[in-house]
Length: 391
Image 1 (cartoon, rainbow, N blue to C red):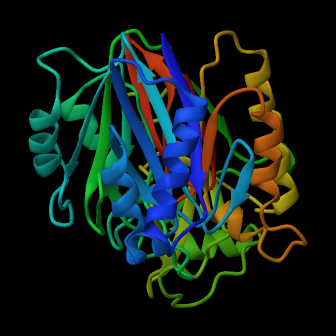
Image 2 (cartoon, rainbow, N blue to C red):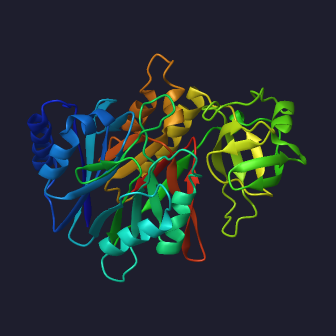
């Protein structure tokens, strides 16, 4: 049996009070069993003030997570929060670890950290992954590394994020330590029944075109339909900026069907356009392979919120729900900033998940399986999406 609880504090300056509030909620909400771990999410100011370290070191179990811009738990929603999603069990075991830096290389340092942390030779039932958002690195590399280390295991998580305009300077967290280039994780072993949900944007947000990527390398798309990427996108209604700098197109998502992937399961993913090169190539946040089909989407707040409510509403009908972790792309949050209620998506999620302990936070990129193929989970990186893990 697995039991969960969500704890939170808004106290960023009084470190003892922050810990006291968390420990009081812990004693009131849940009785810890033999094995316990926690997912911790907080605003970066909790790191700077020392509140993160005080809380993490005062808890009777290990934690891992990231900084975030805003979040929600049962009974609370806001930006200036530190939250802990507690998982405890007599039959499920947890191992927490972190590769201190994956700036230069991902798989090697992550593999070493996993070997130090793992529980014997048994394959984990679930990996909770918390990589950094690093400028210039294709984000799907953080997912693909697990394929070489723990092939077939389901991987779910979020890239770190901060509330800077370009979402840079986020930190990953392991215990009381926060690192800008660290890769934290929780390995979960035993009898788990993880279920995954993905919300993107409504069908009506798709533009009436589908372009084939005819020349690309990694996350740089040079040609679509045999033409320079920028020229093609201009003709289908996107007024591209000449020589745009990195991060200029925060709200420009594309639906991508990567049909040439070896593990393609028919489920498209969203990719964010980052910039154009002077030559007219489109630079995306993650790999877009040749042979893929791209469709430009319209990113709007109402559509994102509607998809969130519809997808998370399905959790009410699921059997044996012990808790839920939810990560939503920070771009979805940013399109809400100019609305009357910038926390509306979080509040809709809180309503939908009211029947179970949950933690939802904003993400610098989402990690979630799309299916199981030949007995192995197809783990994918997502942009502009909401992903949910139901335990």
